[in-house]
Structures are given as structure tokens and as C-alpha cells.
Length: 403
Ligand SMILES: Cc1ncc(COP(=O)(O)O)c(C=O)c1O
Image 1: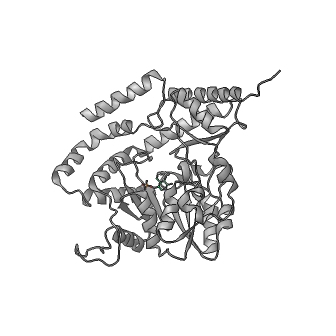
Image 2: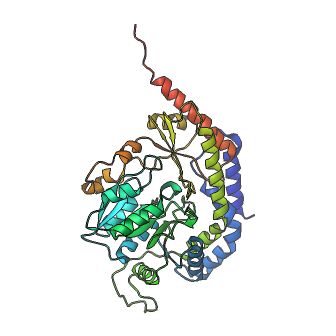
């Protein structure tokens, strides 16, 4: 084992041995597992100097397209650019509207606005916190050209019904699959449903690079070509370095990230299965507490969905106090997302109507630790700590009898 891998492993055992704390995630553990397998190739690339494009990028693009069950993948600089460039490649811009759920990372809606179009915010399901055919239909107007379906937290919504709604309205489907590597709906992988699908390989994602990276996948060759051109200063395939067909940008996947992604892709299924097993343990332990169904709610999983648990999200009343109690017990948590997109200052002007589920849930969402190298004991500790936190907050808020 290389030095770096040994360091990562020792940090990990320090984390897991005492159990006085549980981190939110553990990127070093994933790096430590994969590093011995990619070290030589990584070093060879560093010494060779072929950092932009080249065989490592082409190989990863081929592997990622095959994994998603589509014909083409175009490696890009990040997931945000993947969304914006996809819209531009589909000819969507000024005067067009794109429906997005408001419960998502701001990049989804920001990409629409940055492409010059107008985001139309949709509400989400009370049970899954994902867009539904009904909330999509509510947001469609005659100017709507597309919908960005977000597979939030790692779960795909009802794609059969959403695709039917989009088809009936004559609008394009773009998947924001940034949190859903390997997720499935009815046995079909995320990325294979839309005209295009956008992935982020931000380090904390289920498939994460050693820095920023992203990709678009599609089975339409002309779209793949156009996206590649737009992401490479408008250079057409085969054109010289200084011939530009259109105004593009610079958003290319680099070779070192491609090597790390190919290395990690070999582990993705095992890591995903581990996430699913951890989630099942969480569900067993949290599904039957004295608080379940009242102060504590689990998010539902549709029977046809393969949820890949990028995040394990529950809903709790008095969320901020619960978080503080968990922090006291050494448990790191997150909130995805505390402020819905339509309430964010740069996007407020696009907010048109109340979105009751998004608005109510934003104050209750709580993401518990979830990462493939998490141990069963750590899950147990988080669940015990969460129950203690719920009890502590309930007691502190009991009315005091004044004589
Ligand atoms: C749902 C969603 N969309 C888009 C993005 C943007 O991806 P990136 O951070 O790679 O630009 C993210 C990443 O955080 C995301 O979670």
C-alpha cells in the first residue's frame, strides 16, 4: 500500500475506533481505497504532461456512457456547466421557461437563469420530496420548453409518469443526476431517460473526483458533439485550435480527474450497495422510535426506485435545536437545503406562487452521516444520539409550571 493510502487508512481507523464522533462523510477513505490502483497511471500522466483531454478522458467517457446505458458521455469541468451547456445545446435561452423543483441545489435553477431562460419553480411530493407529474403540470405554461428533473438525494422520481407529462406538453426532459450515480427507475439507470442528463463529480458525490468535474450523457450524437464544442471554446471536432464555430466556454474534464474517476468507477457498485445497506439499517432503527411519525419522519422510497443514498435525509421538527444537540454528541449533519431556490435572493424574482411542501420541509430537513466506509456501529450511534437529541429538545421545550 502506498504512503497516501496508509495515511488515509490510519485516519479512518482513528475515526471508527472510538465512536465518540461520526463525520458527515469520509472522502479520504474512498481515496485511500482507490489510490493504490491509480497511483502509477496518475504519476505517468503528471510526468507525461498530457493534462487536457487525451486517452484517459476518452476512456472514462466511454466507461461512463456504458455505465449509464447511453451512447455518449462528454466530460466537463463541473455539473453546473453540464446543466447550462445542455440548455444552450438544446437551443433554450431568452424567452423560454424551464421547470425546476425548488428543493434542489441552487445550481439547477441558476443554470437556467445563466442560460438566459426563466426558471419556473415546482413543488415536490410530501413523501419523497421529489417533483411529481402533478407539480410539474402545475408549473407548465405555453412558454415552457423543458423540465429539469432532479434525482435529489439519490432517488429518481416517477420517471414513467413525468416523461408522459413532459411528452404531452411537448417539452424536453433534462435530468439533473448530480446526486444519482447508479440510481434506477424500474430497472433503468439515471441518465438514460432524458434528451440529456447532467452529472457532477464534485468530490462529495457518490462518484467524486479529486476536484471539480462533471459530464453530460446522451444518446443523441449531434447533441454530444454540440456540447463538446460549446465546452471547448466553440471548436468543432477536428477543427484547428483557432477555428471557432460558435461562442463557447472552457469547461473540459482534465486527464487527472478522468483517471481518478475511472479508478473510482470500478468501486461504485460496491460503494452504492454499502450505502443501501446503511440506509436500510437507519430505516430499521429510526422506523420504530417513540418519535417516528410525529417529530421524526423518514423520506419514502418508491417501490420502482433504486435509491443510491447520496444523502440520508429525515425530517424533524425543531431541526436547528436537534442539530445542535447532535453536534454536542459529535455527530456531523447537513441540511439539504435550508433555503429553497425560489427564496434565494438572486432567484426570488422568478418566484410566482407558494410552494407549500418545499417551504414547510425546508425548516425540517436533516441529512444524517452517510458514506460507504461508515460502519454499522456508527449508524447505531447516530440513531441513539438522534433519539437522545429528540428527547433533550422535547424536555427543554416542555412548559414550566409557574405556581
Ligand atoms: C442537484 C445538483 N445539481 C447540480 C450540482 C452542481 O454540480 P457541480 O458542483 O459539479 O457544479 C450539484 C452539486 O452540488 C447538485 O447537487
